[in-house]
Length: 68
Image (cartoon, rainbow, N blue to C red; front, side):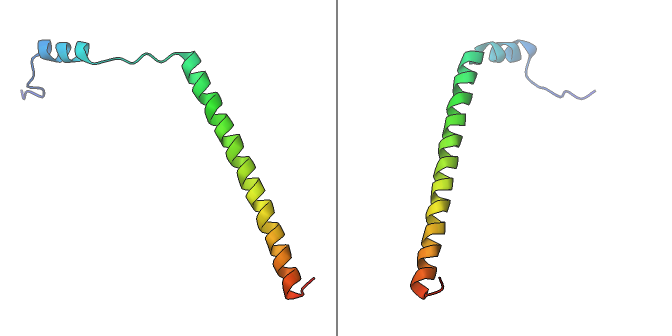
């Protein structure tokens, strides 16, 4: 039989106990989710505003060319 793990179990147990566990509460996750949603809404508003500006610039260019 081949040894898969050469570390003793006591060493593995000690390493696991020493690892930091970061507690994550549902409240913290909810706040983070709300912040991300706000960022996405702001991004969508900016994209829509830029799209409107591009459309207006295209109209201006057409008018300058005499197309309208």
